[in-house]
Image (cartoon, rainbow, N blue to C red; front, top):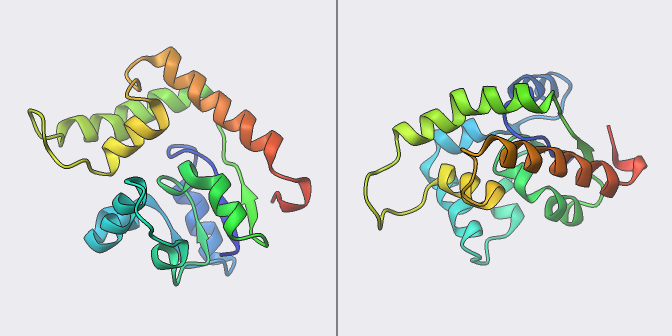
Length: 162
């Protein structure tokens, strides 16, 4: 692993994925890869449940990672891959929320099974893990976004930032 993207989805991560691949840091893992590969999604879900799934099992073959679910695990990934560089993609928090609400959150709500007892999917893990189940509360979600950016900026050593 050479590059770890710590930015939330809807901050230009798909463009960053394309750029990283063009610059020789591919293949690059993105949430789109998880959506397209049930076996990969299963590995991430097992990791989220606390099962002993190693990073090499999940990310073997990838040279970089951006978007969710990787941005949720940015610190753990940087610890595991000590030579990897970090990139934090950002945008205006209000614009980010509007974009995420109109796309990621809207799609997750439309495809969410009705009732209780369904197996959690990746969107549930993002909604619960990142936003504590409160993404619909704009002020809360924007605060989580801003705090995440602040934590990454303050925690990543300068020599590991790109």
